[in-house]
Image 1 (cartoon, rainbow, N blue to C red):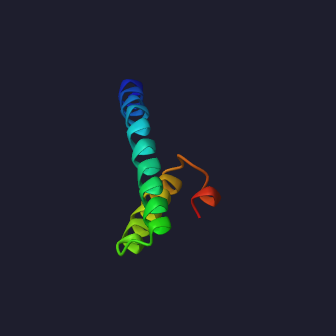
Image 2 (cartoon, helix red, strand yellow):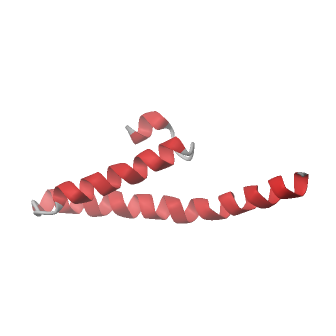
Length: 67
């Protein structure tokens, strides 16, 4: 049983940098779209908020930081 827990923990730890990078990218894209006044700025902000909420729900970042 312990081997399974270690294995799954290792997988989750390996996924974290990818998730964090994706989150940061979405936030950067949304910020640039808002500054430029782009038509798809609302969609970019929605996607960034979705990534932040997902990271907050998984406990990767503080829920208050995600809000």
